[in-house]
Image 1 (cartoon, rainbow, N blue to C red):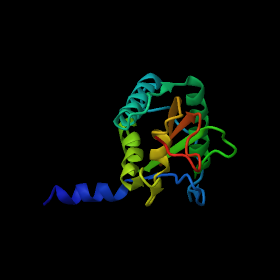
Image 2 (image 1 turned 30 degrees about the horizontal axis):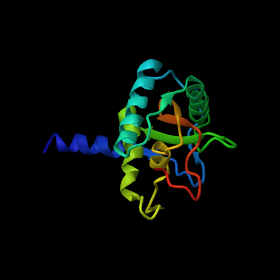
Image 3 (image 1 turned 60 degrees about the vertical axis):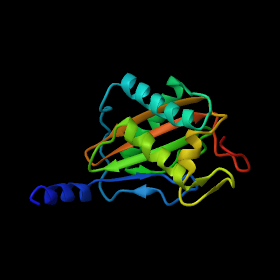
Length: 179
């Protein structure tokens, strides 16, 4: 019982969220902006782990594997750093690529944590009816058959960590099924 109280206290201080692709009010922190810090792991390992995570989910539904795009990864890095520096959380305006966002406060996430959070949205997606109960847009972008490339990045400050993935070509096209 003594161990349960500290664990419960820690669980209550960590929160994570993914951005709804259908829009919502941008996240604005009450704290003043801080400059972002460097990524917690090497860019190469993040790239490899994110790509492997994406492709494992895609393989389960029978869609082709993605390739890593350094250009998309740089776009993702720039946007993640902007979101951290401005303490905002919203999709990049006028972005022609697909985009998934993930943020966590009071803790850190691994590439597997991020991809798993998006993949868990599959439980709300009905492929037969092409309908979603809840949030499914991160999942459907992740498995969008026509998407061929991905690039992801993370930026952090003392309050939170923001992950961004960019996809080309974009998915989530109204009237079309992801796979």
